[in-house]
Image 1 (cartoon, rainbow over the protein chains, first blue to last red):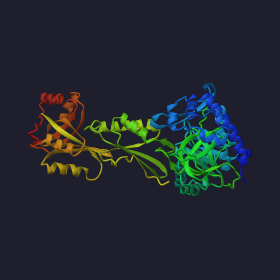
Image 2: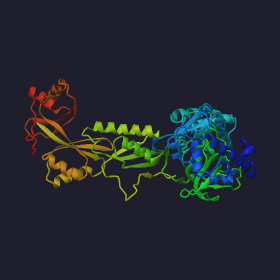
Image 3: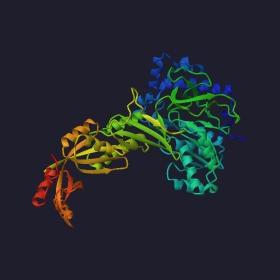
Image 4: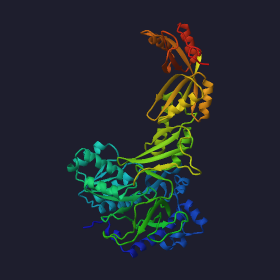
Length: 432
Length: 143
């Protein structure tokens, strides 16, 4: 039997959902107009006032927000509540090094955790379950989001955070974890480790909720078979709250977007024009319940398809496909957002040239990133120790910028192919 | 007494060294000493050649990254304890050796070591005071 965390909301009919959306959107636009001068200015430039937005049908009149806006408005420019009303920030890396900082009131945290609780319940979670969360905790939304959702469902929550495989497996076995929350690549890695150590019979997992990076249907089958579980996808982004914006149900054919909190649109990434249902395009979200950081028409840059086909799980909220790509050059490596421009910034700061190549791969189900950099006369020395010191400096500067380890490969000058016009900056060898 | 060493950046991939030696050979440059220091991904090829100016010009034109450094050639008696004595003289003078390598001897009963230090003149005077012979370019067959 299908379980719901908030049945009346999750299975509400289309009219009811639209009624909520209309009412909340109108209220939200007014809230933003009154409290966010940055967005108000954008609206004024477009000649739009709150009176022009009477329902979801008017949504297309509003200006878009992009990651560039978040950068420009950093840190408080898009804040819609006084700081004294905020209780939390979460953060993610942005372009050219400036981070995205999102603010939450207690109400915002509650609603976010509700969304995660819906996802856990859809994956079969109840208060009888032991929920093992090995998303990173801290600024990254993965850990805090699922942790909060797990509390709401009443699961015994294991706040493992990422890393330390030995400890992960020990707790998983000893405390009989039943639901695993982490990135799909880490799930695949844990599955391998469980297999190698012959622990398959000792684990009690029944479901996994895996998100924050792209994964294929094949990878799902592989994880499901190796762990003997059902693997569910979850979607979200820091800008709109975190994981739980959308989640998969028992049908496993796409993720229900929590439409009582977010209005989803699909647009043509080039023209910004709204596309009809079923079209492939860029996903745009409008947060209609967030108090502190209410982004209107935020362009996610994720390319996907929306469908309102009736779902066998009984949920009525619109479903999004797995993201099929990006409309910008952002890479997701180990669940972390990486922009080539961030790497370029570090290279220039460290005295290297902006001629580089980023090679992303997936080895043993784990993402790797390598940055090929050409040696320069200034950085060269007859003393190998001095070169390796400089290389180490570059590795730690990249780590500080990206938040993950990137291997550096120093190569001979002019050995990185310069194609005519646009350089090939990124080679993604992952088969996702 | 200073000898000019050419150091070239080498990417660890097949044929890199052969390419350099090939270029030098085509241009009639004779290598007198060769030493490589490397990591898994790259290395530094250190060369002493008969005509350092010519060799470096050619290699730069071919797009290699290189640097010239002064090094000191030391005649080490080819007997047990020969190198030990030289090193103890250097360390007593508190001169740090960045690296060193041996070169085929040009003279009988003498080994030849190349020393790279920060203060080349300082090393030369210490060796001189202690009666340790240094090798001239001529000794190494340099132009």
